[in-house]
Length: 80
Image (tube, rainbow, N blue to C red; front, side, top):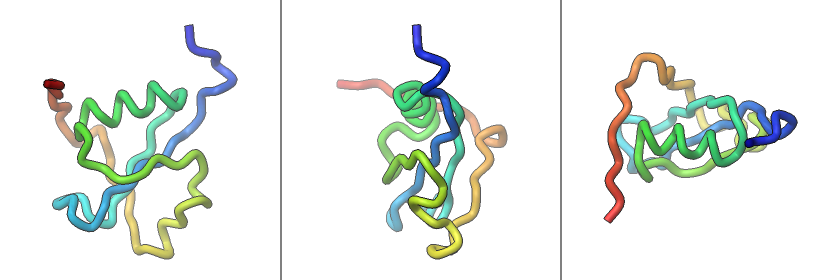
């Protein structure tokens, strides 16, 4: 079972070639691994970085806006 103390808000960014999500970021609450799993269920591996604090990537510096996951449909990722 995951330790509740390690749960927090994680921030995921997209690279400039990750259209249509360029200059977007996603917030996901959970442990490091759980948050990555949720991100993968939506985007597979088509994202750039995971940050533990919004101050670490400074969305305003890169003109990033939040992408609301509740408005997206999850995809099924099949690993080969």
